[in-house]
Image 1 (cartoon, rainbow, N blue to C red):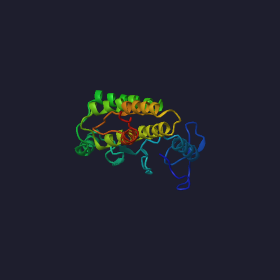
Image 2: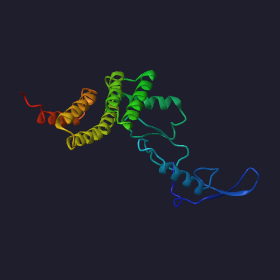
Image 3: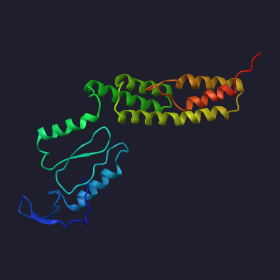
Image 4: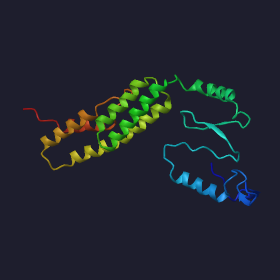
Length: 215
């Protein structure tokens, strides 16, 4: 979207009232300063998960954003031709795997949202169950979806590790800490795409090290 305000000069044109005004040659109707300010606002509020599309001094310019997150440009000569755009999408989809039905996509988005909300509340078991739902909706996911789920699991794994350390370093009697660790294990023992949190191994190691003595 943005352009370098030093890369070109503004131009003077007449507006609808015949008044001479200064505007951006790339984005008529705005000044270069207005456009740069808008670009700064977009960049400063950009969500970390949004894809950054490269800048090209062409207005308009069109892009496809595939699951890989790597934008693919639609040629200037093709961007006003639905048939050519469809052909480019069809060619890209050869490497994307099975197409998800619209309803399934909505279920996946909903499950990811539930997982994120549960993670924010430290409800790790609930978050993992939601991610397991993604695996049910898309049993053969694209690599990009698998990577997204793995990233969400990593976000859960970190605070679970902190909880483990808190129990380990607690001042409560060992029998109480064992119960707390067992409860933590039960909560996070959820498989997502046949994988479990790395912290689960650490929990099992702790429980093995602090096993209840045999009588």
